[in-house]
Image 1 (cartoon, rainbow, N blue to C red):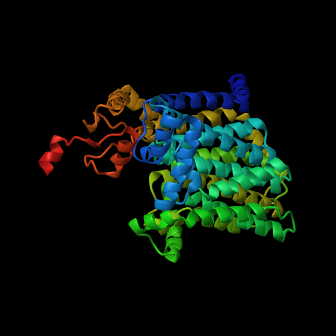
Image 2 (tube, rainbow, N blue to C red):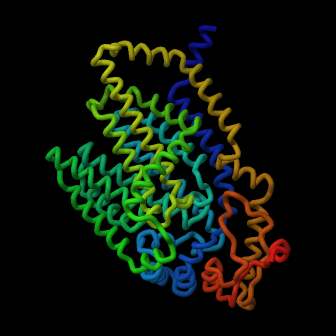
Image 3 (cartoon, rainbow, N blue to C red):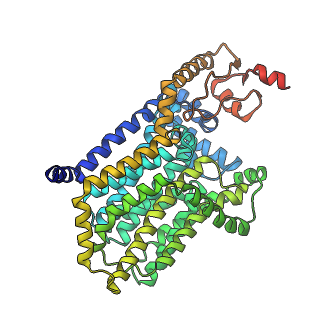
Length: 502
């Protein structure tokens, strides 16, 4: 038995853990990516694609560029100032063909994964001096947890307009944070790095207000730190660019139009309310599964403490600082509409919460470790012995951890993205929805048919379905598609239940 145990412990090493994690990741992503081929545009996909689709059909690539600029101008004057976001939203995959919409899910997953892996390379591998295997295990674990437990899977993974407006810009913010760490804390300064930092600062300022506001807060504290330490002051330029970009965004005439249709909180009340809303969401999101993965990541990071010089002297300050930045993410939507926002916004706040949680826990554990050494609660040799015990029983720890994770996943499988997509594929709901959508497109592309009344879909498969056209032919949900396909009107036929209700 002892020999078997020794062989098992040797077998469960980081390479094997990474290999198993990749297999699990592939297994989980297959139904998600398969389901993406049955997803289709809706609502604002048509609204923001009106000019780009029409122009692309008539004038080709250069006409497409003109269409994008016209879309930015139209929304800037009539609805919202987020010029960078409108550029991306006007280029949804359906612009290039009815069957290209699956690119939405692939694009978002790839960009999110790349941003997390680059953040891991800069912070975990270079900053904390961890090996590449540790970096990849942490990156993949965190990525899979976020994809599986995303609060709003539809608006985060299968609906272009909602996904790129928030998750894409949030991913770019992670790239920006990585570049800032690389430049100002790892002292790796290049002209390319400086250009990317300035470009992203300006581009993100024209995106959603949560990311735009958060990056300005980060730039403010970064510059305060650099000035206090009498270091490089080059971070002032991207800070100024982010402010100017946000100013162009915020001063758009369209914001006043949109603001007139919504009733929000006063600036002071929005800020105060954001602190309480942050606590509410923290409690809700601190689930057993999430905590297990977070602690798993922290355990993998423990050996890094011996490589860094930080004394971890201010845990309360760091925790409060992280809490304030996290709370600030709720402020824009509370100010604009007196709510914490739609699911597409909650998605990025959810991911950032877990990044803050890991960072704060790592710092607090570092503080406790330093105090224990200072007070001689235990010696460094004691910690090394503890690590040896864990390694010598790696197989048992791994099996117990895997069983707990598996049990939680089985119990909560209905909330997981992989299971939800697998379920609609197994029941055939996604396939029926896709077939009926294609039949609708034949009618929309038929120039002879001018008055369109669709039967409701047989299924509304969650999470790949977002919203249908309206029964009211004058609804905004229908107007943009009418312009794209040159119809007199488009509407959904009233069901018998609706008629009876009336």
